[in-house]
Picture 1 (cartoon, helix red, strand yellow):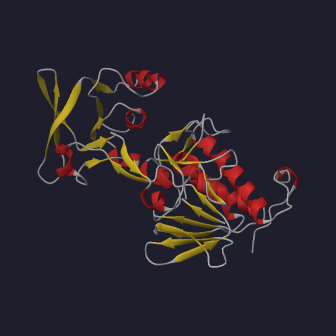
Picture 2: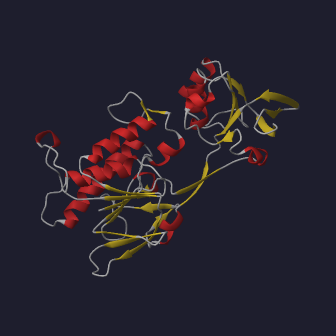
Length: 323
């Protein structure tokens, strides 16, 4: 089974496939497993995974990688899946990679998250990209004793503010509206943590010699100058399906339509996680993990007709790695 995407849903799909005795290959354009969690918020705490009061992104990825490792999945990382075509025998699929490589599999699970993502930004931030301006925080400790400005009003902006408040010298959140899109509980925590919050405000300029040193914020008719050695632009992302859009899959609202088995309109091709859509779907990591289990078990039945859909109880079996 081929899995496109090495985020949580993709990693769990590989584990579930292995549990059913299937081998798997995981393809991802990023150089390491974890998907957007590893790339964008490895230090953020995640609160929607069953069995965890809260778990840091990197810890969740480490646990999912270790879980899948019992069955020896093969990783093809830093390489983009560009095409999907029938294999010559017409019984399986070929994933064509951008560098000319190929992966053949009897079934495919697409767990590509939001597809290709480009961060939204502001014109005044672009000259300082990589010189103090970033769109995520891979390591919280890198901002110790810094003055940090966070631009945005969604959950990511509030989460970064809460995570950095105990570490940075100062944290200021700048939001262009009066009301936050973020969860109300998080917003209350942010104010209680002593974060400076500027609403109805906009970052209009950045200054610094070699790196960012100061930002200017306009609020009403007032212009403020804030010291800033780091600015996090939490303004969301522009997303697209990328090459997946050309694979002959049924697309609804820029997502892949699936049925209750997580199958797309193509035989033995499934989609799970944030890239899929169906009526009533809730976009949570925990939901994506359940979808991965559903897809992998249905793929097992497709590849081995006559086998049971429901796997044996995991508490009754010793895991045996696939050779």
